[in-house]
Length: 619
Ligand SMILES: *[C@@H]1O[C@H](CO)[C@@H](O)[C@H](O)[C@H]1NC(C)=O
Ligand SMILES: *[C@@H]1O[C@H](CO)[C@@H](O)[C@H](O)[C@H]1NC(C)=O
Ligand SMILES: *[C@@H]1O[C@H](CO)[C@@H](O)[C@H](O)[C@H]1NC(C)=O
Ligand SMILES: *[C@@H]1O[C@H](CO)[C@@H](O)[C@H](O)[C@H]1NC(C)=O
Ligand SMILES: *[C@@H]1O[C@H](CO)[C@@H](O)[C@H](O)[C@H]1NC(C)=O
Image (cartoon, rainbow, N blue to C red; front, side):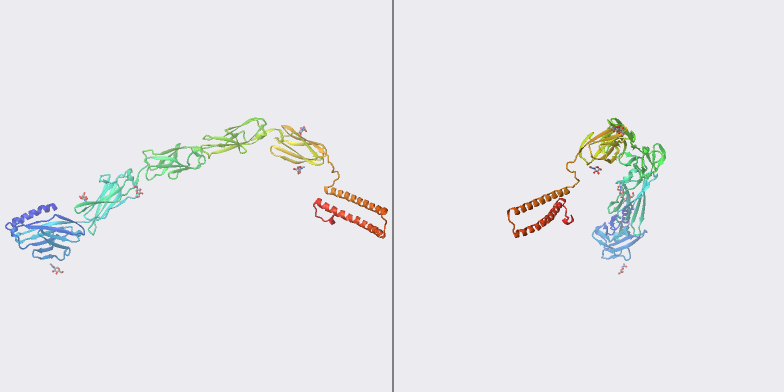
């Protein structure tokens, strides 16, 4: 159209020129189009001149028209002349929104606040009466930038097995003018419509406001690699004298693809598996979404093991669970055999078997080899203990030259160094049989003991069977056994013997295997002075009585001497007679007094000896 008009205009002018060839001609030029943003002001120039400059018309009329919407008719919007007449027509779309300016080159229509409806043709008509008239037109183009594009990826998973392209995303650019275009990108590379691979469905809408909204849907044949792809759309639109583009954000999609590879591994426990453990086998494939799996043992492929999703739990495991396990995805197509496989080994340690069993009797001096074996899937280590002390290493314990010390419980501990949780133990009770063996060094004991005392004689003998102890005591009838004890291996007997004279006591320990004898020889020592059965306190009493008697004798002797002295050497006076009688009385008094004194003295002494606090009156 634009091109047509451009060709038509000179033709039209040429026709005019032919018709008005006698007079000067009007020559008029206009831009084919003027481009302007919505809301801006538009300037549409209309240049004209007259071919015969010497014969310019005195009156020139200028009119602006606009093409009516939806018809071929025109509506005048402005009229003016070179006599200062300027009229904007009332009741048109442009009343109040236009003004026309003029200069030497021509006239110019100015439109304020350009609307979408201003996208139409504007005509400029110049009439110079005798110089004739000319007309030109300009297409006013209006542009509105659309809103940034909005992309929406498909949220559900898209399967690569779909036969036809699947909807991947949609993109919308709203309120643009003229109609914008939408281009799709995958990882920043444009996607061209390709039958069977890429379809782009476009839906454009003319809004009531006059804007265009364009919605584009991308249908795409998804492959597995698209799980990491970024999809975006770009809107392109015209602006004055250019094309501009705005890109959307990127979306990714969920791609569903079948499993092509499966792995099966032991999730727990870490390390070696032993009987009784809870074993967790996990199966994982490369498909999306992760498919359910079936688990089997290699030797029973037709038996599905009970599993929870991708996990197979075996609890508790035994050695019978050892073997090859497999898992298969349920989404795999029938053509390819996709499976995961692993070998499970369950280790074990059987109870220890000890030979000889339970208990064994050995003769003193004998040798014995005890063995301890526990069957295991792994290398074991055996250690022997007796009373908590290590006595041997290895499966066989050698007991050489048995003594009674050899007797006891032998425990073998079997461990698995590579799997410490596995361990067991066994035991054997060794009994050493033999004749009695007296405890203590001396076979013959010599003793000296005061006659009349009690003496304890002890005899202890070990042996198996347990020895019995008998006593044969010569020299005392007065004895009795006060202790008779027996432990597993040791018999102990104590006799309490009254020493009356020299004693020979024989302890006879005997069992089936023999007899041992221990001899006690006791020499009785007679007592020195202690014939009377007095206590030391009584003895001191006797001494005091002797002392008192001596004092009494001394007193009598003294008084006799005094009496003889008085009679023989000094004559007796009255006073003397009186004194004698007095003396006599005093003498009795003295005796009495002495008696009481001695009594007191005795009491004091007794007190000192006994440490007693009793008064003399209580004596
Ligand atoms: C346009 O309207 C105005 C007022 O409404 C009036 O004064 C004027 O004469 C009118 N012009 C034309 C050309 O009808
Ligand atoms: C895909 O989108 C999700 C959510 O927006 C995001 O978490 C994920 O990382 C994206 N994946 C890739 C490959 O970009
Ligand atoms: C939109 O696409 C059409 C057809 O391919 C093309 O003619 C037009 O120039 C494009 N518009 C833009 C703004 O790119
Ligand atoms: C002898 O042994 C008995 C019992 O053990 C004990 O009661 C007693 O006191 C002992 N006698 C002597 C003199 O040791
Ligand atoms: C010791 O006792 C045993 C059995 O009672 C007997 O055969 C043996 O002759 C006794 N020996 C002595 C020295 O008394």
